[in-house]
Amino acid sequence: MRRLLLSLASLLVASVVFGQKFEQLARTPPMGWNSWNHFGCNINEQIVREVAQAMVRSGMRDAGYEYVIIDDCWQGERDSLGFIQPDPERFPSGMKALADYIHSLGLKFGIYSDAGDRTCAGRPGSRGHEYQDALTYARWGVDYLKYDWCHTENLNPIGAYTTMRDALYAAGRPVVFSICEWGTNEPWKWGRTIGHLWRTTGDITNCWDCIIDHGTWKSWGILQILDKQDGLRIYAGPGHWNDPDMLEVGNGMRVSEDRAHFSMWAMLAAPLIAGNDIRHMSEATREILTNREVIAVDQDTLGIQGFPYRREAGVEIWFRPLAGGDWAMAILNRTETPRTVTFNFREEYIFDDFSKRGTFFDRITYRLRDLWAHRDIGTTETPLTVEVPGHDVVMLRLIAPKP
Ligand code: GLA
Image (cartoon, rainbow, N blue to C red; front, side, top):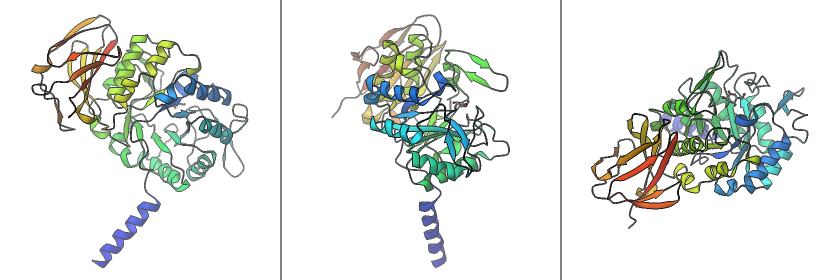
């Protein structure tokens, strides 16, 4: 018995010192901006500063966007002791100064590295330097790390991501840890104790319905990424999220496609990481990204992902249980043709086995709030008929009577 108690106690000590991620971070899906989708490798400190300013000016910060994340290509060489340096031409003032500036605006600072010896763009990766890099990030004031999976031959993914998790924890500065191995090794099955979010797919691209073949890899349109989320909702929850990749809102798709993309990411409780040039976005793009009623669905504290309830000839009806007995509902038109959809709440029995929540339309009447028109449109007592334009969505909040 004594031996058992002793080993339990040492296990406890070990798990306090090592072997854990920073808990209490990302209790709702992280929100922010990342440089990759729009800028790719063409990034520098001036752009990042201007983006941070735009985050404040546009109202994005006040709508909940928090992390300003520099993706690949910020890295220069390692110094003679192996410490990573930023690219001196792109980031001449250094990362500490940039982090300080971002923090001074009430925002947080994110960075990118890779579990292999090189990043996807061929810059130095963290392999063999994990503790050193984590220490460097802590000194700079990094709050978020996206950790990629290129050039990882013979690496075990659980081991590699655990090493970086432990390195971050040992460095002592709370960091949201974003696992980016594209879903290759089913990170939803092991990521929960290691990171705060994990990519579920390969890279997104700014297209509604397409697959782009780059030879050794493919990138995926909005519908393709959406379909790849099937079956994954049981793995997500507060502090550990499925990540269907960063937003393409404002990167060239139609406004309706951007709206539908944003809505579906909110139904999925996805991280909302804008990927456009927010310094010069259109008013339509700004309105999508700062739609607080949709963001409130994404950030709902219950942290349960939505699910497709009905899929019929290119029209999908999704539901998502929310805190306080409310539900979110999205009617997605995947097709090019406008569709008239009628939904007779009273005759639908919706029960989510995962969250053990039901709508009980036969005995609960919900108020219907249109989250894009920003108006109330009736109740669940009468059937709803809506017209959903092609490649668009109607998104509602079903508001339960409050006692
Ligand atoms: C991978 C990731 C992308 C991006 C690039 C950078 O493709 O999945 O999100 O970080 O690398 O090179």
